[in-house]
Image (tube, rainbow, N blue to C red):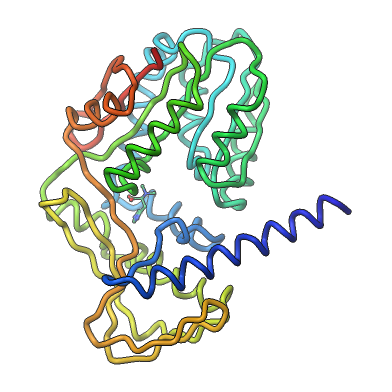
Length: 326
Ligand code: AVI
């Protein structure tokens, strides 16, 4: 009874936060919506589909590196008793790494932190098939999940934390720095962190990765409006918006926007939103920063980590960087 009550009140809190963010960000100039709201059940499924697209190479490049260098990663990480993955998605990468490389000596606690309960369910099912693991899920923001992990009494071994998939690229530099410092604070001396980061590549390739010919990424972007209509009693006309992707070279980021195709009323009852959007006006829904390998190391060192090793794939498209807590 009490569990059901607290699940219901958590949903109510999440809806209230969503409404407050929609009201705040949609009325900023330029208009925005935070990309963390992409990941409802449909959004998570669309993201999984994006990871299968031949034009979005992040997932395959990263899995190749994890398979190839997994044993070296574990050798650097020492006697790992706990792994923590932030933004675990469907759990495929964590599974790849554990299967490819874990020394089978002790029980391994796998902590999965993700805002999407659907993604956590799927990841738990995928990881449950592994021997000798205990799965702990945290359906929360990264910060809350990390605080929960940090407060847990440790079994004595080291923690190997994972922040993969170029999730770091969805933070701007100051927020990313604050986040990485918080991440470092949640880890202990001798723990390690593995970060996956997408690298700068020719503009055409970057744009294709975020504006695929099948329209899956466009659906992922527009689903944010579907979610607002459903959860916040909105009346936004989906046909009034198109998916637009821009490579912002100065800021080194791919931006996704929703462009208003005509002058139209934006009405979202539960978010107290009621304004007119002009034709051509956009809502900025996501930034995906792209890096140089040395820039990733610098960013992590600035946040107080110690660089251990970096691996880049043969196409120079993606980097895995392992850092430690001194
Ligand atoms: C989750 N994140 C790292 C993805 C990215 O590449 O920024 C989300 C995404 N957006 C469009 N395609 C994929």
